[in-house]
Image 1 (cartoon, rainbow over the protein chains, first blue to last red):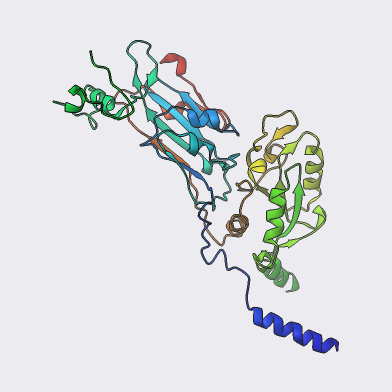
Image 2: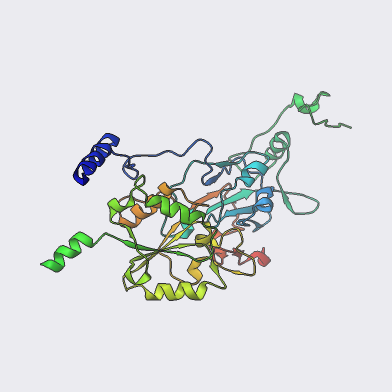
Length: 174
Length: 178
């Protein structure tokens, strides 16, 4: 009797086949809505520090090291992957990636360190980022120290015209 | 001969002890999930044991709390000498979301030396298996610190080499001289 039940059990097990994942050998992608490691895009980041203010774990640090450079430092060690930084980012510079294979033996491997170039207000001397792309282009034309991005804007009809450049912003001209 | 055979057979089989020092039980569930036949981690020789005296590896979940730090330290000292510590989850890696409350001392590396970090809140079972495979030397780790500089100033006004401090707080040394 017991032998028969064992044989039945063996047949059931043989029918089921192999259920174990071959994970480290075979890839196993995360589901679509999975929030993995946040990736900071330095070309889109404007240094507004909204992510640092909204991070519940308080691990995105923002500090100005000199007049032109603001440092965004993401530690990554106590991140709960809540995605609030990606939600609050006005420029969508933070994306929650699908990357979960972040195990490491050095905790410093998780950090991301961005040094952002900021313009200087001629009046107050603090750093800011030019808010609109138009102003960024205007300022880039006059920067003598940045040879790569230097370009001269000869004529910009969008700036001189009366119609607003962006629909929801009315630029008042004198 | 028996000893060398034992070393060959059992050299990479880790017996793990599972210590929760005040986490929310999320990481515990993921660790137990890893031990199920679906993610069968016993094929790497990993076995859950009930006492730190039998264990080679301690899986730490939860931050080091004021109340449990002593017990965690004693459990670590009870383990026999070649021992590894895995910090699983954001709490164990960095103190977690309540890292600055009165009851939390911080990450478990304030109490014990940690060898491997598996971040996540909670980490996926695959992430835990990945960490174990990294520890066993089956796979190489994938993460590396990202450092980006948008602009090199032609006149040196800021040297990244002068950034001092731990990874918790970074201070620029010559900030006053600028």
